[in-house]
Length: 436
Ligand code: DSN
Picture 1 (tube, helix red, strand yellow):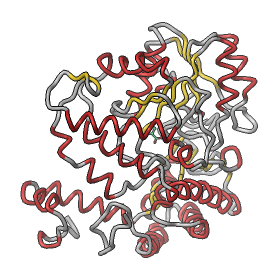
Picture 2 (picture 1 turned 180 degrees about the vertical axis):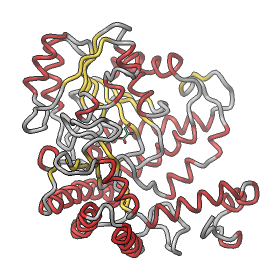
Picture 3 (picture 1 turned 30 degrees about the horizontal axis):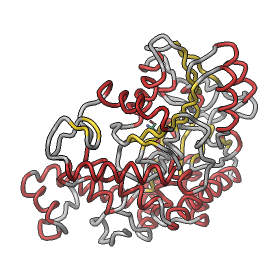
Picture 4 (picture 1 turned 90 degrees about the vertical axis):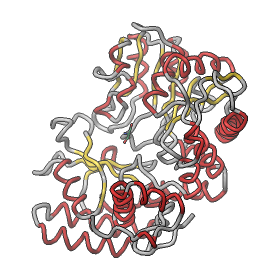
């Protein structure tokens, strides 16, 4: 393994202990740290957590079993675990302005499954944005539990604007009479009109579930409209724009608290991951600061700047641009696919992901789009002026997709550039100091 740090260079007891026990994993972590330092992370669902979040994630709360909820556990010895979970819940409620939060879901898909279990019975109709249009597997896609347990109906985007067409959503809801409607997605670059979705849900007697996994940090920062009080249930992961550990939360009013809690435990899950809960609490504390509000606004400003710089270079963007943290380059008119493009960018240290575009004529495993986002670069302190440079590199790579020499040259420039932007939470890597 190249560049593995010597034992003497290991900065903390945890790292030293790991190296003593398992140098293979220690080397891989060190290599990943360097990789995360030396590349530009443009996957919109990824971020860099702070050292504080990492410390809680790696803490001894991983040792404890805690089935149940605070003060109602099936194991003894919960005095500190209960306090951690109560803190996480209180912070989530305060940050998002809700009456109840469940912080135990292991990740986004289990959170959405629990939300469905809370309000649906098998065979009920559920409606969501189709996966190829930027929805999520758990919003009713046929190979997922949500399309297997329930009668799933999927809405599409407007074929011209590639935006949500509320009239179509309303027509579909009137026709199909869903019991629950999902709004939110993974590759939709525009704002969600939660109030309008609630009006549609109310008209047909459906529960509105807002999945804000992608934009939770923007919502917390005031950089995206909040689904509260419109959606009866809000689900979110905690590790995307919210910049916490890999986990999830379900937010709701007091009226649905019992049903949501029961759906998470005992219906779906066993013991909560208490170390993750501790780290969620830390991330929520960080997200309540003025610095985080500025961070959220900067993510959006950077995404808009990146979109504008790409559009100026002739790239077609789904819906023409972005209102949030992500954008989708539409390469339908190019001789290469989104996968070819994303792989070439990756070789240059520009890490995005290939993605379908609305009404894609190519297959999902080799689609026409590249999905990019700015949460991680913004965490490194990059500003709108740096997006111009990133767009220029993207253009150089895509215009020279077969030219290994040009791509290698960009990779070196990217590595140099990255040296000016410390990576939060990472001690090792080009001798940089952590930002936080
Ligand atoms: N995998 C997530 C994303 O990248 O958007 C969604 O679950």
